[in-house]
Amino acid sequence: MVLYLDSAIVTEARVASKFGWISGVTTNPTLLVKSDLSPEATLKELSEIVSGELYYQLTATNFDDMMAEAKAASKLIGHQIVLKIPATATGFQALSHLSGEINCSVTGIYHPAQAVVAVEAGAKYALAYVNRATRLLGDGLKLVREMAEVVQGSGTEILAASIKSPDEAVATLLAGANHLTLPFSVLQAMTTQELSEQTFKEFNEKGRGIMY
Ligand SMILES: O=C[C@H](O)COP(=O)(O)O
Image (cartoon, rainbow, N blue to C red; front, side, top):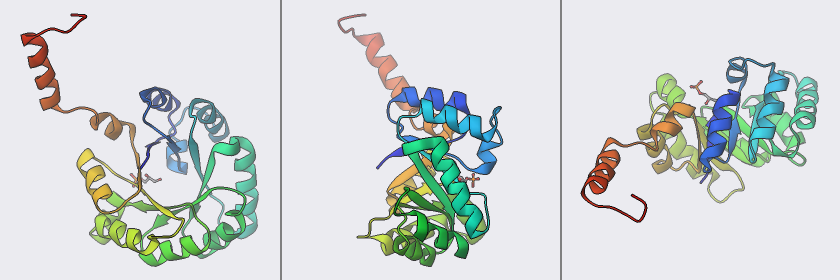
């Protein structure tokens, strides 16, 4: 399992990369627009900050433009790129042409059948939007469970996104997701528990180590 930061804010990526346990950054058009820099400058900066994978979501909607955008993004980001390709008929066609040369994921999956096509077209990752699917379909965890079952044994792994809390992150992994991408606030929240803070305060008040 790996954890990614789901953000295009350069300062967040800088802090998260220093955590030491974040394997890359996922972006999408609405995250990129929140950056102070242009999408190109943001992606360039992120590629320098992050040592692992950097996800870029295609915005083109026809096949030829998707291919051109994929090549431009690949040139800009380099070997760290993972393309996020929309789960549409044209997207799957683009995926089958691109997956031999660039690491690709399929994004915006709302039905396990789309995950089956993602496998056949060569996706490295299939993305489930957990919270969004719960809001739109009633049960995002069921979607994750079914996707995990249909891709089992293939070369495609489930990357879960749209996760709003540590509880939802854990439930998503228990439902069968292989990897998670999380907003900065959720990553931070996952490190902090009031009881842990209290426990170590108590130890340190009652005893001492070699330094203090
Ligand atoms: O790129 C996908 C995002 O993680 C979706 O998250 P959201 O549903 O909060 O926009």
